[in-house]
Image 1 (tube, rainbow, N blue to C red):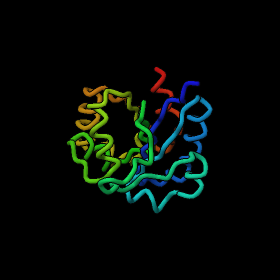
Image 2 (image 1 turned 45 degrees about the vertical axis):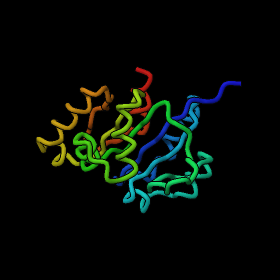
Image 3 (image 1 turned 30 degrees about the vertical axis):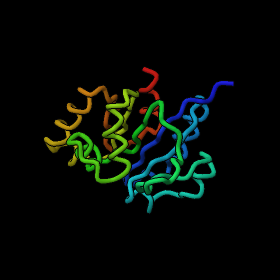
Length: 163
């Protein structure tokens, strides 16, 4: 029996992050085995117990110690949702000061599909660093959903994996 493909859902500390269960449910309905990786700041906004129960895996938010077992299987794809201004810009610069950013920076070398749903303010989206970061990420093959101020789609980044 073939195993399900593994999807990492990387979540950042945006106000909508508490609704990530909707994305997890949609991914599971599409046949994904889902593991969640959260930025440290996102941990304060999510129900870790509920997500662990929903996925069957602990949420990863910190580096593991040498010799500790890997709590998640290797990913076949990654969805970053919600992706904040801060995380998008750091990722584009190759800054991996959190586990989530480290995984995103490594994903290019893994050659797996990565899709992103930004979640930021219109003022942040107007900053020139944001467009430059999106352009860099696109050049590496990252699929980026359109940013629409005032609305958020939990499933658009997942749809981009199929496109």
